[in-house]
Each structure stands twice: as structure tokens, then as C-alpha cells.
Length: 266
Ligand SMILES: C[S@@+](CC[C@H](N)C(=O)[O-])C[C@H]1O[C@@H](n2cnc3c(N)ncnc32)[C@H](O)[C@@H]1O
Image 1 (spheres, rainbow, N blue to C red):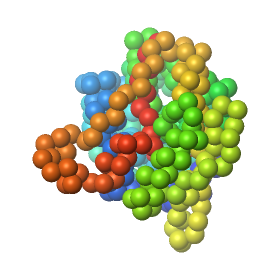
Image 2 (cartoon, helix red, strand yellow):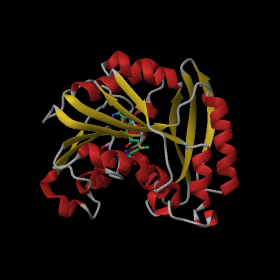
Image 3 (cartoon, rainbow, N blue to C red):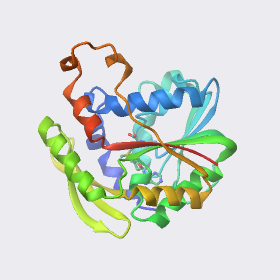
Image 4 (cartoon, rainbow, N blue to C red):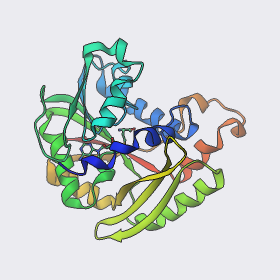
């Protein structure tokens, strides 16, 4: 298995940082919802790769899925997802599997109508690892199915983009500290510093590969149609006549979004 232990001690810190109440996540969550709802339709069977502690898992059911199989490499993350209050209402419609999503394994119940992965691809340090993740999505998807992925913002010059994005984040004083680590052949690595349950500093590592690396990895894995979605402000702000009522986290994030949203078909 890939680096199973990496996320295991980070559950509380990860959840402090990915606090659903924080406006920081609204832009991502709202764009994901807008894309996923019509794709999940009424009753699609969904495979969620790298479910983590279930940030999206139970929402996918609310958006119309009949069932979700949620897979992660970290058993602690899966336990945290199982412990969410929404688990009781979801019952058997959500199930979990401890597995590597870069192994090209065919999971129970495959092929699925929809495969969804938030922040899986950003764990690939190079194109070969990313091809394996895309292949895992591909082998578990129906020929007419759709793969939706949330990942780090993708650009042809990840370091320059990262620097711009960091400036925006600094302006907002957000509780997110990302640090450049090093340039790599296919992009760069960075660390996300998070606060542990006792206030101690912890971190996890992510990768930002070039946009063209994403696209060629996806095609190599069997996805012919690769679309980057244009992000938009959450609908609830569309009618705002006074732009200052839109939270600054949203306005600034839209200038240099820290995530990208991909829709892929075979
Ligand atoms: C930043 S968290 C995101 C979790 C969740 N999708 C979310 O949006 O909050 C990344 C997750 O990817 C999982 N992960 C990393 N590499 C993986 C792999 N090869 N197979 C399965 N899960 C993996 C980690 O265990 C972690 O739970």
C-alpha cells in the first residue's frame, strides 16, 4: 500500500483545518455540489476515492445517490467518517473500504455510475502515480460513467501560481499555512501545516503537478474527455447588490483558487 501511515495521526488536525463551518471551504463545496447533483442524478451508485473523514461522503447521498462506497488508505480517517452524526441516517447506503486508490483494484460493486475523489490526485508525487490513480477511477467506472475530481489548482507553472495564491491567503489571515517544499520533475511539493488536538504543529504533504501532466495522465489511463470546470461564486451570493456582503474569503479565493475541479469521461 502507498503511504498508509501518513494521514493516520492527522485526523483531528485535518478536521480542525477542514472545518465545514469555515467560509474557506464554501467555494469548493458549493462548486462540487453544483457539478455533482446533476451527475449523480436520482439514484446513481457512487464510488468515493480518498473519502478521508467523510467531508463529502454523506452529502453525496443527499445529492441523489442511492449508495456510496467510500474508500481510503487511512483506517483512522475511515473511522472518523463512520463516527460522523450523519452515519445513522445513511445506514447501509454508505459503506467503507480500507484500500489504496492507486492500486488499480476493482472494488466490490464495480462498475459505478460515478466516481468522485476530493484531494486524492494531490497525493501523487509524479505522473506515474497519477496515472495509477486515474486508472483506479477508470476500471471502477461504467463506460458511460463520470469521474469528478477535486484537486489542487493546476497550472503550467505551479510554483508561480502557488506564490500568488499564498499572497491572497496572507491578505486574509486565514488559518491555512501552506509552504513550498521543492520543485519536482512533474511539478512541486508543498506542506500543509495543521494544528493538532493539543495545539501542536503537524503537517501533511501535497503535490501540485503541471496541468498538462494531469491531462496526459488522465488520457493515458483511459479518459478521453477531460474538462476543467470554471469555478463560480456560490449561488447564494449571486443576488448580492453590495459586493462587500460577499465574504472576502470567497472573493479573494476566486482570484487565485487553491483548487481545481475536473470532470472526466471515457
Ligand atoms: C486531504 S485528505 C481529503 C479527504 C476528503 N476527501 C476531503 O475532501 O476532506 C486526503 C485523503 O487522501 C487519502 N489518501 C492519500 N493517498 C491515498 C491513496 N493512495 N489511496 C487512498 N486514499 C489515499 C488520505 O488518507 C486522506 O484521507
